[in-house]
Image (cartoon, rainbow, N blue to C red; front, top):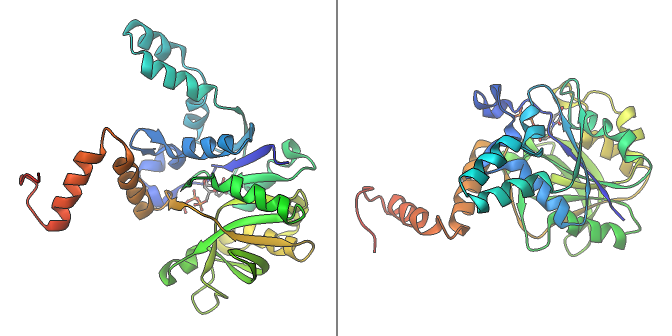
Length: 296
Ligand code: UTP
């Protein structure tokens, strides 16, 4: 049973500079909801109620966001904005959230290692703080189901990635043992197209066994001089089985500019208050029409 989740959110977010100079990338909004709230909600919807967010310098906004805000609540009461008040209070009561600091952004593996004391000797979930996955069954819940079916071995979410994106991902060498399920034979962090053993890339959702901590400790600096979680998973797979699962759902790499734009458009098209206006606007753009033309 998976009860705890780690959400690493201590990276520098350099792809989103200058915005991330003074705000965490995980707090960038998809219209009016920060990216990290989607991630926290996915964990909660999967039955996880103990969440550890790994933060670092300049990430105070994340802690404030999930905290209560008496001044704001009073203001909303005074102005009789009860719907907003309910939403604001709800954010603060989503789950039990703990914060652990990663003093320097030494890589995703290092960030996960920081949670060791809190996790202890039980399997746990990792959800990257800048990946949003829209799915009927929450992606991490899908992995949890597989984890139970496959003898409680580690499972990582994977998807096909395009040739030009391969060098941004941990790429799998695997044997497809069942529909959409791979037994991981190797995994290489950010390979060049020539080195890549496949086009199956790991995305930001993992169920890991506590053995991963020992593996991270044995992992030296890898790509980008960072301690890579991918390299630790490579060690893990030589000690116990690791599976890759092609999850059902749509993933947005919201830590990447194009992924962020796509997420905003898709979420706007799903909202009753925005879909018509956004849809009409997109139709005009696609048709190459001036913005002033009316579409009925
Ligand atoms: P990324 O590599 O996408 O984040 O890590 P980054 O380093 O902040 O981004 P760029 O490349 O500079 O734009 C994925 C997730 O892991 C966290 C990040 O905060 C992000 O949510 N992370 C990364 C850590 O917590 N610690 C690290 O040392 C590195």
